[in-house]
Structures are given as C-alpha cells and as structure tokens.
Length: 354
Image (cartoon, rainbow, N blue to C red; front, side, top):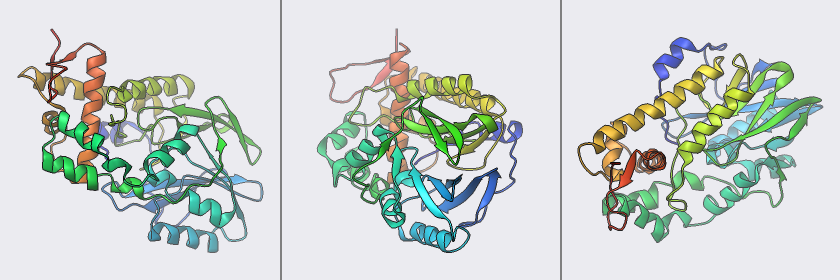
C-alpha cells in the first residue's frame, strides 16, 4: 500500500497521541480497557500493520492479520504461546481485503478454529484479486496503463511485478459471516457499532464502541499519512476519491471528535474531526496541483504522476501512484474541472474544462 505524508507535519502538531511509541514487534499493549494493540512488520515502505485484540469472554477476538509470510506466522505463534497463552482466539474480524489486513485470515481461522467476519465486498474482492492467479497480469490491465500514458516497459513491469503484494494471502475459509453497516456486533458483552467506508477499499469495516468512545478506524483515517485511494482497470471511470471524501464526512458526523482512534497503521490518536478535515484538504491541494499542470497543456495520467509523487518509485509504488493520480483525475472530471482532450484517442489526456 502506497501512502503519502498528507499534512503529516500539521497532524503531528495538532493531534494528540496518548502513546509516544508503538509496542515492539510481538508485544502487547493495552490501549483501552479490554483492547490490546500488537504491531506486526511488513516488508514495504510502510513497514508495519496494527492488529487489535478485543476481550471476548474467555478469549480474544482478533481484528486483522498481517500478510501471509513466515515472519508474520512466527509473530502469531509467539503470541499464542507467550502472552496470550491459556486464552483462545474466538473470532477473526477483517476490516478490508488488502493483504496486510486479510493475508493470514485463512491460516489463522484454520489454525485456531475460529470464524471469519468481514464485509461481503472484502471477502469477494480478496477471492477475485488476491486469490486469482495471474488476474492482475491480464491484458486489460496493461492496456489500461498504456492508454493513460505509461510507457510499455513500465507497464510490463507494473502489471507483472507491481501487484506482487496482492498475492500475499492464504486461501480464505469457505464460509464467513457478513458484516454490514448499521449492524451491532457484541464482543465480550460490549456493543460495537459496525460502520463501513469506501475509497481506500470498498466496504471497509470500522467498529465504534460508543459506551467507551473508542473508534477502530482501520485504514480510513490515519494520523500522519493518507490512505491510498486508487482507480483500477476493472472500473476505469470510478470515483473512489469522491467516495472517500463522502466517507470522511460521514465519519465526522457519526463519531465524536474526542474519540480515541485506533488506526490500522501508525499511532492511536485523538483529534478525529481535525484529521478528517486535514485529509480532505490534502486531496483538494492535489487537485490544485493537477489543475495547474493541465493549464500548461493536455496531460496523461502518467504525465501527472511526477506532479504529485516526486521521489523515485519502484513497481509496487508506481502501480499505486498511477492509480491514485487517476482517482484525482476522475474526481475532477466528475466535478467538471477537467475534460478529456479527445475521448476517442488511443492515448487519453485531460485538459482544463472550458
């Protein structure tokens, strides 16, 4: 997952962080009564994912998993033989289908005989993308990149190697319990409201413990980086950025500003409403940069990538950077700020709308 600073300096100044640092790998830290925080490493630029354990009677409900690799399995084995010894894992709740969150779902459910709870989109999306061999290498993906300005060599690399992390997933359980926005999930006698958000991942699950004002936000709201929001080849005209901004507004309307936010990455924080506003402002600033570039002449999505992302990008990062720039282009097309220079051309470019 590619993430970017996204007003991080301002966030660090204005948000409140109740924990100065994360627990070391494999160690548990209580972040709220009956809620434990574990950090698991990732082999990417974003080098960790946060896992949460919620007290559930005689055991612990698990929120998210880490990717499917040997180090992650080793962390889990050390946890259940060490600090979690003597108490079972009762159920697995997966927030969304990205491999750092769902990657070990199949292995964990089988290893510890627990059910999987997630949204239908997360379950089916994982089956369709991560567990379909070669799906991301199909010709229409390469054509998608080429039509929007990526050169052939880069398109070949991105379509064959750029999506490798999507395959870091174990076979899902054959059944699951569907979580739907508006549901109430009882865990250990406490009632968690189920919310879902879009943009970063469709129908991403979030949980709100209203009685204790704790919000498990998954990747929808992060303190110092912006979640990736991408257009993909299967929905080339989609508006994930519009959906993401709508989700931020819905979160701010539903969850109090003083909630403790437990995110999928980085540190827990206070300041939810301010952070939602910062994230929206960040994306508007990107749209301003894109508009300025297009004022100089027609631009393909690929030509706009360096306008937003200034550092060198490996194939994994390029796939996300390209698709995130495309999300901003589609959002601006929908708002009437950009238009296709020639919608029938072999190479698609956008211009400022007249």
